[in-house]
Length: 345
View (spheres, rainbow, N blue to C red):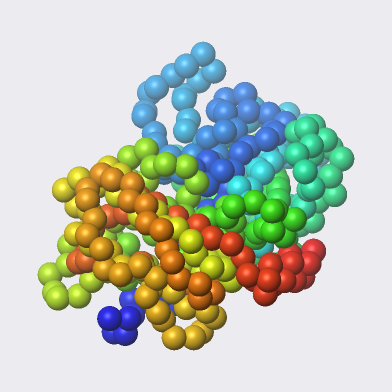
C-alpha cells in the first residue's frame, strides 16, 4: 500500500539531508589548492569519515586524513589558504559542513566559502585566478575536531565552491549539500537516467535508513561495496520499506534497473515501482517482482504516462545498491527544466 505512517526523515528539516555534491563518490573533484604540503587536498571530498592513527609519521610529520597546509608566517589579517571543489553537477547549495575531525592544535580558527558558476571545463589555474566569486558563507569561526555546519541562503546555480581557511591549518572533510540541476542543453539530446543525482534527481522521503543513506541509490557508477548502497534495519512487523525520488524532470519511463549488488544475505525478496505526476495519484510502473541477491535486474517498462516522482517499495526490507530509471523528458518536462535553469542564474 502507498498509504500508512510516514517516517520523520520525510520532513528533511536540515540541509544535510540533501546529497553531498562535493563527494568523490557523487563525481566531485578538488581541482586546485594553493598549498597542501602536509596533507593532500583530495582528502577533503572522500565520502567516508576521516580516520586517525596516532604516532603515524611520514617525511612531513603526523599523517592526517584531510587537507593540511604549512604554517603561514605573515602578519596580514586576510592571509589565507584556499581549495576549490568542482561539484558533481550544477546545483543550488543548501549548506556546507567544514569538518575539522582530528585537527586539534592545527585547525584554522576561521573559514569562508565562496561559489562560482563556470561554463565548460576550463583549466584549474583559470578557475582559480580568472573567476568571479560570490560569498555564500561569510568569514566565520570554526572549532577543532568538530563538524561545523553553515546554512547557505542562495537560490543561484553554482558549479564550483572555494573554501578559504584563515590563516592556515587543516580541514578533514568539506561537504557541500544541495539540489543538483539538469542542464537543459543536454536534456533534449541524450539518453537520461531520470533518477540520477547527476541529472538533478534526489530522494525526498524514505521509510528507513538505519545502515546507510538512500541517496546512495542515485550515485553514478556501480557500487563497490555493500556500504555504497541503501540498507534498512530488519523489520519485525507486517509492513515494508520504501524510498521516494523526485525525478530530474517530468518524463516517460522506458526501463528500470534495480541493482542488489553486494547484498547477498540481505537483499529484498521483491520490489515494486510506483509513479505519479506532480501531486497526482500514484500508479503502478512495475508490478511486485521477485528479486535475486547480488544481481543487476533490468526491466522494460511499457507505460506511457508521464511521471515526476517515483517510489520504490522493497519487501519486506533489506538493501539496494542502485536505482536507475531510464526515459525521456516530455515537452512540458523539458520546458520546466529550462525554466528552473534560467531562474537559478
